[in-house]
Amino acid sequence: EGLVLPQSIGGFLDLSSLTSAEGLVLPQNIGGYLDLNNLTNAKGLVLPQSIGGLNLGSLTSAKGLEFPQSIGGSLYLSSLTSEEGLVFPQSIGGSLYLSSLTSAEGLVFPQSIGGSLYLNRLTNAKGLELPQRIGGDLDLNSLISAKGLMLPQIIDNDLNLSSLTSAEGLILPQRVGGNLDLGSLTSAKGLVLPQRIDGYLDLNSLTNAEELELPQNIGGDIILSDLANAEGLKFPQRIGGDLDLNSLTNAERLELPQRIDGDLGLNSLTSAEGLVLPQSIGGDLFLKSLTSAEGLIIPEPLTYTIHMNGFEINPENVEQYRKSKSK
Image 1 (cartoon, rainbow, N blue to C red):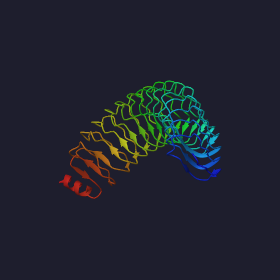
Image 2 (image 1 turned 180 degrees about the horizontal axis):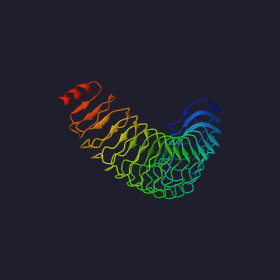
Image 3 (image 1 turned 30 degrees about the vertical axis):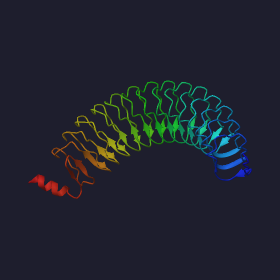
């Protein structure tokens, strides 16, 4: 009440303590973010024609809410549980936060979202029609079924599907520009991975490699921390990050990549028998269950540290170790 704002504000407008929009006359143009984080309903709210970003993070209903045609930055609607009355702007230049939405039926997204899309509470894809392009992350970390899920062909950053236990119905993009989290998948049956993953690939719940075909291009880690055996496992020639095989107890049928740019984790291996190390490891080698290096073919020259149970071999002490073994 009594608040008179200028017609145009080039930067941010922080009205985050406001609990009611009745009587509020906003500028026609706001170049930065408009923070109305404490509003729980849109009654009396008339938004600017042009806005750099909008925080309505406590809004529980979209009834009566009218957006401008374009929002240059991010749109926070983190507390909305229903899509009723929700009509998005034609363009969102930043991220869209719908972290509490439990149903996507009736939801019509803009064709393109410049940043990330957060749909953290969706458990199924019924009625979900995603934008053709998502410039950041796509977070569907509560989705338990991929039935009906149509993903964009390219996701520029991370794709989080960490609650999926089955790949049934899952058609992944050709390329994921960041990380791909499939950490709850217990089987690779029917799984067709993207041709290229620029970040890490999390498959930490797989216990076997049956039907698993890894991409030839993985820029980050490969996490297979529950894998019990290496049968059928084929790696790309190079992994851009760490390789986590920390549940393997033996190296039978294990063919490692020629190059691992990060660490190699084989912490449950109880014997080095049959272990052929990569030509190059950019990080360290972890063999924490080995009490001796017997059978281990140590590269020459050694450029990294080998961590074992109670001792380690590194470039500084490797010659001393070799001399002690030759006596």
